[in-house]
Image (cartoon, rainbow, N blue to C red; front, side, top):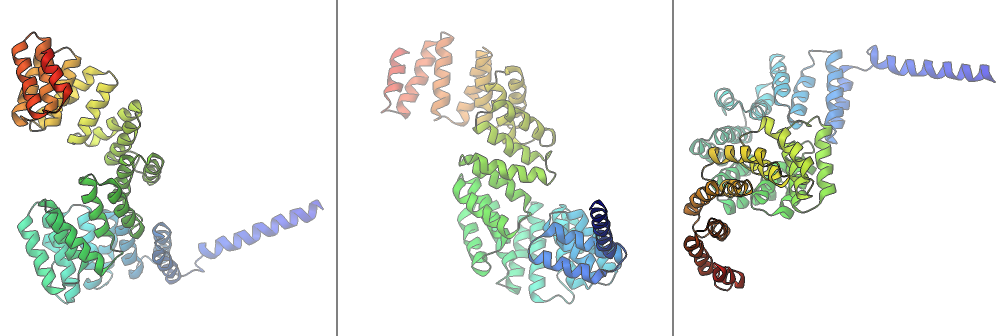
Length: 415
Protein backbone atom coordinates (compact mmCIF):
# COMPACT_ATOMS: atom_id res chain seq x y z
CA UNK A 1 0.00 0.00 0.00
CA UNK A 2 2.81 2.41 0.91
CA UNK A 3 4.60 1.61 -2.36
CA UNK A 4 1.39 2.35 -4.29
CA UNK A 5 1.15 5.76 -2.58
CA UNK A 6 4.79 6.50 -3.44
CA UNK A 7 4.19 5.59 -7.09
CA UNK A 8 1.12 7.84 -7.22
CA UNK A 9 3.14 10.67 -5.74
CA UNK A 10 5.94 10.20 -8.28
CA UNK A 11 3.38 10.08 -11.11
CA UNK A 12 1.79 13.31 -9.86
CA UNK A 13 5.18 15.02 -9.72
CA UNK A 14 5.99 13.89 -13.26
CA UNK A 15 2.67 15.20 -14.53
CA UNK A 16 3.24 18.53 -12.78
CA UNK A 17 6.75 18.73 -14.24
CA UNK A 18 5.39 18.12 -17.72
CA UNK A 19 2.76 20.87 -17.29
CA UNK A 20 5.38 23.36 -16.12
CA UNK A 21 7.89 22.35 -18.75
CA UNK A 22 5.38 22.95 -21.54
CA UNK A 23 5.48 26.64 -20.70
CA UNK A 24 9.11 26.77 -19.67
CA UNK A 25 10.57 25.18 -22.78
CA UNK A 26 8.59 27.09 -25.34
CA UNK A 27 5.78 24.70 -26.26
CA UNK A 28 3.48 27.74 -26.00
CA UNK A 29 4.34 30.25 -28.70
CA UNK A 30 4.42 34.00 -28.30
CA UNK A 31 1.36 34.21 -30.60
CA UNK A 32 -0.55 31.90 -28.27
CA UNK A 33 0.37 34.06 -25.28
CA UNK A 34 -0.91 37.11 -27.19
CA UNK A 35 -4.16 35.28 -27.99
CA UNK A 36 -4.59 34.45 -24.30
CA UNK A 37 -3.93 38.10 -23.41
CA UNK A 38 -6.65 39.29 -25.80
CA UNK A 39 -9.18 37.04 -24.07
CA UNK A 40 -8.23 38.56 -20.70
CA UNK A 41 -8.40 42.07 -22.16
CA UNK A 42 -11.93 41.45 -23.44
CA UNK A 43 -12.90 40.43 -19.91
CA UNK A 44 -11.12 43.49 -18.40
CA UNK A 45 -8.70 41.13 -16.61
CA UNK A 46 -5.82 43.51 -17.13
CA UNK A 47 -3.33 42.05 -14.66
CA UNK A 48 -3.72 38.61 -16.21
CA UNK A 49 -3.40 40.12 -19.70
CA UNK A 50 -0.16 41.87 -18.77
CA UNK A 51 1.32 38.58 -17.51
CA UNK A 52 0.47 36.79 -20.76
CA UNK A 53 1.96 39.62 -22.83
CA UNK A 54 5.14 39.60 -20.78
CA UNK A 55 5.37 35.84 -21.33
CA UNK A 56 5.01 36.47 -25.08
CA UNK A 57 7.89 38.95 -24.95
CA UNK A 58 10.06 36.45 -23.07
CA UNK A 59 9.48 34.07 -25.98
CA UNK A 60 9.98 36.79 -28.59
CA UNK A 61 11.19 40.22 -27.55
CA UNK A 62 10.41 41.56 -31.03
CA UNK A 63 6.73 40.61 -31.03
CA UNK A 64 5.32 43.98 -32.11
CA UNK A 65 1.72 43.18 -31.27
CA UNK A 66 2.65 42.11 -27.74
CA UNK A 67 4.55 45.37 -27.21
CA UNK A 68 1.68 47.46 -28.54
CA UNK A 69 -0.99 45.61 -26.54
CA UNK A 70 1.11 45.78 -23.38
CA UNK A 71 1.30 49.55 -23.85
CA UNK A 72 -2.49 49.65 -24.13
CA UNK A 73 -2.87 47.54 -20.98
CA UNK A 74 -0.50 49.80 -19.04
CA UNK A 75 -2.65 52.81 -20.01
CA UNK A 76 -5.74 51.06 -18.65
CA UNK A 77 -3.79 50.36 -15.46
CA UNK A 78 -2.75 54.03 -15.22
CA UNK A 79 0.96 53.26 -15.63
CA UNK A 80 2.08 56.06 -17.96
CA UNK A 81 5.86 55.52 -17.92
CA UNK A 82 5.63 51.79 -18.72
CA UNK A 83 3.01 52.44 -21.39
CA UNK A 84 5.21 55.03 -23.11
CA UNK A 85 8.21 52.69 -23.03
CA UNK A 86 6.33 49.78 -24.61
CA UNK A 87 4.62 51.94 -27.24
CA UNK A 88 7.89 53.52 -28.34
CA UNK A 89 9.46 50.07 -28.62
CA UNK A 90 6.47 48.91 -30.69
CA UNK A 91 6.90 51.93 -32.96
CA UNK A 92 10.59 51.14 -33.48
CA UNK A 93 9.64 47.56 -34.34
CA UNK A 94 7.37 48.79 -37.11
CA UNK A 95 3.91 49.30 -35.62
CA UNK A 96 2.11 51.91 -37.73
CA UNK A 97 1.90 55.46 -36.44
CA UNK A 98 -1.89 55.31 -36.68
CA UNK A 99 -1.94 52.52 -34.10
CA UNK A 100 0.48 54.19 -31.70
CA UNK A 101 -0.24 57.92 -31.78
CA UNK A 102 -3.38 57.99 -29.60
CA UNK A 103 -2.22 55.59 -26.84
CA UNK A 104 1.17 57.33 -26.83
CA UNK A 105 -0.57 60.68 -26.27
CA UNK A 106 -2.58 59.11 -23.45
CA UNK A 107 0.61 57.79 -21.84
CA UNK A 108 2.12 61.29 -21.94
CA UNK A 109 -1.03 62.77 -20.37
CA UNK A 110 -0.84 60.22 -17.55
CA UNK A 111 2.69 61.46 -16.84
CA UNK A 112 1.70 65.15 -17.10
CA UNK A 113 4.17 65.57 -19.98
CA UNK A 114 2.00 68.21 -21.59
CA UNK A 115 4.71 70.03 -23.54
CA UNK A 116 6.05 66.72 -24.91
CA UNK A 117 2.57 65.73 -26.05
CA UNK A 118 1.92 69.07 -27.76
CA UNK A 119 5.30 69.02 -29.49
CA UNK A 120 5.18 65.41 -30.67
CA UNK A 121 1.54 64.42 -31.16
CA UNK A 122 0.08 66.07 -34.25
CA UNK A 123 -3.27 65.39 -35.99
CA UNK A 124 -1.85 65.13 -39.52
CA UNK A 125 -0.45 62.41 -41.74
CA UNK A 126 -2.58 59.45 -42.72
CA UNK A 127 -4.83 59.54 -39.66
CA UNK A 128 -8.56 59.20 -40.28
CA UNK A 129 -10.94 62.05 -39.42
CA UNK A 130 -12.01 60.17 -36.26
CA UNK A 131 -8.39 59.66 -35.21
CA UNK A 132 -7.54 63.31 -35.88
CA UNK A 133 -10.52 64.38 -33.78
CA UNK A 134 -9.30 62.17 -30.94
CA UNK A 135 -5.81 63.67 -31.21
CA UNK A 136 -7.32 67.18 -31.02
CA UNK A 137 -9.20 66.08 -27.88
CA UNK A 138 -5.99 64.85 -26.25
CA UNK A 139 -4.12 68.00 -27.23
CA UNK A 140 -6.99 70.03 -25.79
CA UNK A 141 -6.73 68.08 -22.55
CA UNK A 142 -3.00 68.85 -22.39
CA UNK A 143 -3.65 72.57 -22.87
CA UNK A 144 -6.44 72.51 -20.29
CA UNK A 145 -4.30 70.73 -17.68
CA UNK A 146 -1.58 73.30 -18.38
CA UNK A 147 -4.05 76.14 -17.78
CA UNK A 148 -4.27 77.40 -21.38
CA UNK A 149 -8.04 77.42 -21.78
CA UNK A 150 -8.28 79.32 -25.07
CA UNK A 151 -5.96 76.86 -26.82
CA UNK A 152 -7.88 73.95 -25.30
CA UNK A 153 -11.15 75.35 -26.64
CA UNK A 154 -9.60 75.78 -30.08
CA UNK A 155 -8.46 72.14 -30.16
CA UNK A 156 -11.90 70.90 -29.05
CA UNK A 157 -13.69 73.01 -31.67
CA UNK A 158 -11.41 71.73 -34.44
CA UNK A 159 -11.93 68.15 -33.34
CA UNK A 160 -15.71 68.60 -33.12
CA UNK A 161 -15.81 69.85 -36.73
CA UNK A 162 -13.97 66.69 -37.81
CA UNK A 163 -16.16 64.28 -35.86
CA UNK A 164 -19.21 65.61 -33.98
CA UNK A 165 -19.82 62.12 -32.53
CA UNK A 166 -16.39 61.94 -30.88
CA UNK A 167 -17.06 61.33 -27.16
CA UNK A 168 -13.58 62.42 -26.08
CA UNK A 169 -14.28 65.84 -27.65
CA UNK A 170 -17.60 66.11 -25.81
CA UNK A 171 -15.96 65.30 -22.49
CA UNK A 172 -13.23 67.81 -23.34
CA UNK A 173 -15.86 70.54 -23.72
CA UNK A 174 -17.42 69.35 -20.46
CA UNK A 175 -14.07 69.59 -18.64
CA UNK A 176 -13.53 73.09 -20.00
CA UNK A 177 -17.02 74.17 -18.90
CA UNK A 178 -16.50 72.66 -15.42
CA UNK A 179 -13.15 74.47 -15.09
CA UNK A 180 -14.93 77.73 -15.91
CA UNK A 181 -17.63 77.03 -13.31
CA UNK A 182 -20.31 76.35 -15.94
CA UNK A 183 -21.60 73.16 -14.37
CA UNK A 184 -24.87 73.06 -16.33
CA UNK A 185 -22.98 73.30 -19.63
CA UNK A 186 -20.65 70.56 -18.42
CA UNK A 187 -23.58 68.28 -17.65
CA UNK A 188 -25.08 68.95 -21.10
CA UNK A 189 -21.88 67.81 -22.81
CA UNK A 190 -21.62 64.77 -20.53
CA UNK A 191 -25.20 63.79 -21.41
CA UNK A 192 -24.35 64.06 -25.11
CA UNK A 193 -21.32 61.82 -24.66
CA UNK A 194 -23.30 59.20 -22.74
CA UNK A 195 -26.02 59.19 -25.38
CA UNK A 196 -23.34 58.18 -27.89
CA UNK A 197 -21.61 55.72 -25.55
CA UNK A 198 -23.33 54.86 -22.27
CA UNK A 199 -20.20 52.98 -21.14
CA UNK A 200 -17.76 55.86 -21.65
CA UNK A 201 -15.90 55.82 -18.32
CA UNK A 202 -14.38 59.31 -18.72
CA UNK A 203 -17.86 60.87 -18.92
CA UNK A 204 -19.06 59.06 -15.79
CA UNK A 205 -15.83 60.01 -14.01
CA UNK A 206 -16.23 63.71 -14.76
CA UNK A 207 -19.89 63.64 -13.74
CA UNK A 208 -18.89 62.02 -10.46
CA UNK A 209 -16.29 64.72 -9.82
CA UNK A 210 -18.82 67.48 -10.50
CA UNK A 211 -21.44 65.94 -8.22
CA UNK A 212 -18.86 65.41 -5.46
CA UNK A 213 -17.66 69.02 -5.71
CA UNK A 214 -21.26 70.23 -5.39
CA UNK A 215 -21.94 68.10 -2.33
CA UNK A 216 -24.24 65.63 -4.09
CA UNK A 217 -22.73 62.53 -2.53
CA UNK A 218 -25.38 60.02 -3.64
CA UNK A 219 -25.23 61.18 -7.27
CA UNK A 220 -21.42 61.18 -7.11
CA UNK A 221 -21.35 57.62 -5.80
CA UNK A 222 -23.63 56.43 -8.61
CA UNK A 223 -21.62 58.14 -11.36
CA UNK A 224 -18.27 57.01 -9.99
CA UNK A 225 -19.56 53.43 -9.65
CA UNK A 226 -20.36 53.47 -13.35
CA UNK A 227 -16.90 54.82 -14.15
CA UNK A 228 -15.32 52.03 -12.09
CA UNK A 229 -17.59 49.45 -13.74
CA UNK A 230 -16.44 50.43 -17.23
CA UNK A 231 -12.82 51.16 -16.25
CA UNK A 232 -12.07 48.85 -13.29
CA UNK A 233 -8.59 50.22 -12.63
CA UNK A 234 -9.64 53.85 -12.26
CA UNK A 235 -7.68 54.51 -9.08
CA UNK A 236 -8.75 58.13 -8.56
CA UNK A 237 -12.41 57.26 -9.03
CA UNK A 238 -12.17 54.47 -6.47
CA UNK A 239 -10.74 56.93 -3.93
CA UNK A 240 -13.39 59.54 -4.74
CA UNK A 241 -16.16 56.97 -4.45
CA UNK A 242 -14.82 56.10 -1.00
CA UNK A 243 -15.05 59.80 -0.09
CA UNK A 244 -18.64 60.00 -1.37
CA UNK A 245 -19.51 56.89 0.63
CA UNK A 246 -18.02 58.38 3.80
CA UNK A 247 -20.16 61.49 3.28
CA UNK A 248 -23.17 59.15 2.98
CA UNK A 249 -22.09 57.36 6.18
CA UNK A 250 -21.58 54.14 4.22
CA UNK A 251 -18.45 53.44 6.19
CA UNK A 252 -17.93 49.69 5.48
CA UNK A 253 -18.32 50.30 1.73
CA UNK A 254 -15.95 53.26 1.78
CA UNK A 255 -13.39 51.32 3.79
CA UNK A 256 -13.66 48.45 1.29
CA UNK A 257 -12.71 50.90 -1.49
CA UNK A 258 -9.72 52.11 0.56
CA UNK A 259 -8.64 48.52 1.16
CA UNK A 260 -8.71 47.82 -2.61
CA UNK A 261 -6.47 50.84 -3.17
CA UNK A 262 -4.01 49.65 -0.53
CA UNK A 263 -3.96 46.20 -2.16
CA UNK A 264 -2.83 47.97 -5.32
CA UNK A 265 0.20 49.30 -3.46
CA UNK A 266 -1.19 52.78 -2.70
CA UNK A 267 -0.77 52.64 1.08
CA UNK A 268 1.38 55.80 1.01
CA UNK A 269 -0.63 57.70 -1.60
CA UNK A 270 -1.51 61.17 -0.22
CA UNK A 271 -5.07 61.31 -1.56
CA UNK A 272 -5.84 57.76 -0.41
CA UNK A 273 -4.66 58.66 3.10
CA UNK A 274 -6.63 61.91 3.01
CA UNK A 275 -9.84 60.06 2.15
CA UNK A 276 -9.12 57.40 4.79
CA UNK A 277 -8.61 60.22 7.30
CA UNK A 278 -11.98 61.76 6.39
CA UNK A 279 -13.61 58.39 7.01
CA UNK A 280 -12.01 58.10 10.45
CA UNK A 281 -12.83 61.73 11.28
CA UNK A 282 -16.51 61.35 10.45
CA UNK A 283 -16.66 58.25 12.66
CA UNK A 284 -15.01 60.25 15.47
CA UNK A 285 -11.92 58.04 15.38
CA UNK A 286 -9.71 61.08 15.77
CA UNK A 287 -6.42 59.36 16.60
CA UNK A 288 -6.63 57.20 13.47
CA UNK A 289 -7.69 60.28 11.49
CA UNK A 290 -4.63 62.20 12.70
CA UNK A 291 -2.33 59.35 11.63
CA UNK A 292 -3.88 59.22 8.15
CA UNK A 293 -3.79 63.00 7.71
CA UNK A 294 -0.16 63.15 8.87
CA UNK A 295 0.78 60.52 6.28
CA UNK A 296 -1.04 62.48 3.58
CA UNK A 297 0.64 65.74 4.63
CA UNK A 298 4.11 64.31 3.94
CA UNK A 299 3.46 64.42 0.19
CA UNK A 300 0.57 66.89 -0.01
CA UNK A 301 1.44 69.79 2.33
CA UNK A 302 -0.23 72.46 0.18
CA UNK A 303 -3.79 71.05 0.38
CA UNK A 304 -6.12 73.56 2.04
CA UNK A 305 -8.76 70.97 2.93
CA UNK A 306 -6.19 68.53 4.33
CA UNK A 307 -4.67 71.20 6.56
CA UNK A 308 -8.10 72.24 7.86
CA UNK A 309 -8.85 68.62 8.76
CA UNK A 310 -5.43 68.10 10.33
CA UNK A 311 -5.62 71.25 12.47
CA UNK A 312 -9.20 70.46 13.50
CA UNK A 313 -8.24 66.90 14.43
CA UNK A 314 -5.37 68.12 16.62
CA UNK A 315 -7.77 70.66 18.17
CA UNK A 316 -10.35 67.99 19.04
CA UNK A 317 -7.60 65.75 20.48
CA UNK A 318 -6.54 68.64 22.72
CA UNK A 319 -3.12 68.92 21.05
CA UNK A 320 -3.42 72.69 20.87
CA UNK A 321 0.18 73.56 20.05
CA UNK A 322 0.23 71.24 17.05
CA UNK A 323 -3.19 72.53 16.00
CA UNK A 324 -1.90 76.10 16.32
CA UNK A 325 1.18 75.44 14.17
CA UNK A 326 -0.89 73.90 11.37
CA UNK A 327 -3.61 76.57 11.57
CA UNK A 328 -1.07 79.41 11.51
CA UNK A 329 0.63 77.92 8.47
CA UNK A 330 -2.76 77.43 6.85
CA UNK A 331 -3.86 81.03 7.45
CA UNK A 332 -0.54 82.35 6.14
CA UNK A 333 -0.71 80.35 2.91
CA UNK A 334 -4.46 80.91 2.37
CA UNK A 335 -5.13 84.42 3.74
CA UNK A 336 -8.47 84.62 1.89
CA UNK A 337 -9.82 81.45 3.50
CA UNK A 338 -12.59 82.25 5.96
CA UNK A 339 -12.48 78.70 7.31
CA UNK A 340 -8.77 79.06 8.09
CA UNK A 341 -9.37 82.29 10.04
CA UNK A 342 -12.27 80.82 12.00
CA UNK A 343 -10.29 77.71 12.86
CA UNK A 344 -7.23 79.64 13.99
CA UNK A 345 -9.49 81.95 16.00
CA UNK A 346 -11.07 78.98 17.79
CA UNK A 347 -7.62 77.57 18.58
CA UNK A 348 -6.44 80.94 19.90
CA UNK A 349 -9.49 81.05 22.20
CA UNK A 350 -8.70 77.57 23.50
CA UNK A 351 -5.16 78.74 24.21
CA UNK A 352 -6.64 81.79 26.06
CA UNK A 353 -5.04 84.08 23.48
CA UNK A 354 -8.12 86.32 23.30
CA UNK A 355 -6.46 89.36 21.75
CA UNK A 356 -5.02 87.28 18.91
CA UNK A 357 -8.40 85.61 18.39
CA UNK A 358 -10.24 88.95 18.29
CA UNK A 359 -7.78 90.40 15.79
CA UNK A 360 -8.09 87.36 13.54
CA UNK A 361 -11.89 87.19 13.69
CA UNK A 362 -12.27 90.89 12.98
CA UNK A 363 -10.23 90.36 9.81
CA UNK A 364 -12.51 87.45 8.92
CA UNK A 365 -15.58 89.64 9.59
CA UNK A 366 -14.35 92.21 7.05
CA UNK A 367 -14.38 89.45 4.43
CA UNK A 368 -17.75 88.08 5.59
CA UNK A 369 -19.68 90.85 7.40
CA UNK A 370 -22.90 88.83 7.71
CA UNK A 371 -21.34 85.70 9.18
CA UNK A 372 -23.40 85.06 12.32
CA UNK A 373 -20.91 82.57 13.78
CA UNK A 374 -18.09 85.10 13.67
CA UNK A 375 -20.33 87.84 15.12
CA UNK A 376 -21.44 85.60 18.01
CA UNK A 377 -17.85 84.59 18.78
CA UNK A 378 -16.61 88.18 18.70
CA UNK A 379 -19.48 89.31 20.90
CA UNK A 380 -18.63 86.65 23.49
CA UNK A 381 -14.91 87.50 23.39
CA UNK A 382 -15.60 91.20 23.83
CA UNK A 383 -17.75 90.49 26.88
CA UNK A 384 -15.02 88.25 28.32
CA UNK A 385 -12.56 91.09 27.81
CA UNK A 386 -14.94 93.51 29.56
CA UNK A 387 -15.74 95.48 26.40
CA UNK A 388 -19.53 95.49 26.80
CA UNK A 389 -20.22 98.20 24.24
CA UNK A 390 -18.57 96.31 21.37
CA UNK A 391 -19.99 93.02 22.60
CA UNK A 392 -23.48 94.54 22.58
CA UNK A 393 -22.85 95.99 19.12
CA UNK A 394 -21.97 92.57 17.73
CA UNK A 395 -25.08 91.00 19.28
CA UNK A 396 -27.21 93.78 17.78
CA UNK A 397 -25.85 92.78 14.36
CA UNK A 398 -26.73 89.15 15.10
CA UNK A 399 -30.31 90.14 15.97
CA UNK A 400 -30.60 92.20 12.78
CA UNK A 401 -29.52 89.15 10.76
CA UNK A 402 -31.69 86.71 12.76
CA UNK A 403 -34.66 88.78 13.95
CA UNK A 404 -36.77 85.70 14.75
CA UNK A 405 -34.11 84.04 16.91
CA UNK A 406 -35.08 83.98 20.63
CA UNK A 407 -31.50 82.99 21.52
CA UNK A 408 -30.05 86.01 19.73
CA UNK A 409 -32.45 88.38 21.53
CA UNK A 410 -31.70 86.75 24.88
CA UNK A 411 -27.95 87.15 24.37
CA UNK A 412 -28.45 90.78 23.44
CA UNK A 413 -30.36 91.34 26.68
CA UNK A 414 -27.58 89.61 28.64
CA UNK A 415 -24.96 91.80 26.94
